[in-house]
Length: 118
Length: 106
Image (tube, rainbow over all chains, first blue to last red; front, side):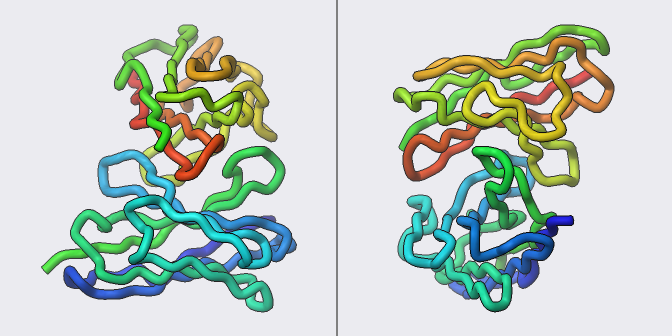
């Protein structure tokens, strides 16, 4: 069974930093482009970033550009998202996701919560 | 960025009803559109990719159509488990974007 498990979410103060992790199992992790998607409480999802199978290509939402960094370690089946200069509007549930058998995001984790508040 | 506008924002319906949800893109996105269902407390679940391709394991009462800027998701006969929030998402260009959602209520 394919599984994605996120961790690293926490409550932080504005301006703080955090590193999120996502561990994948049940698939050949290094075959897939990986995504981060976030969802603020009570709102719709917002795509954040993606990284290609080999880490050679990345894309970011405007809201993440310059503050967030996506990376991966294929030897550890792990995806990361480094969050910096956090703002209250970054408060959200952060999901990792991938396209496996369909031409859209068909595998999702359960998410890890980031709360930015003083 | 490509904006996606979903309508209606909420919809009341009954079990057995046929409903159609709409997603309009601010610029042409070919058929690079997906539909998701989200129930409270869970992640989005893929229903449709490439505007009209049913995702693996999704019941055939769900169908999608459209290309360019106008897309629809149709549920032919609502079941109790279909009452949830639906989102469209475009993959045509970066940044990838989602619509604001349609909440389907009993």
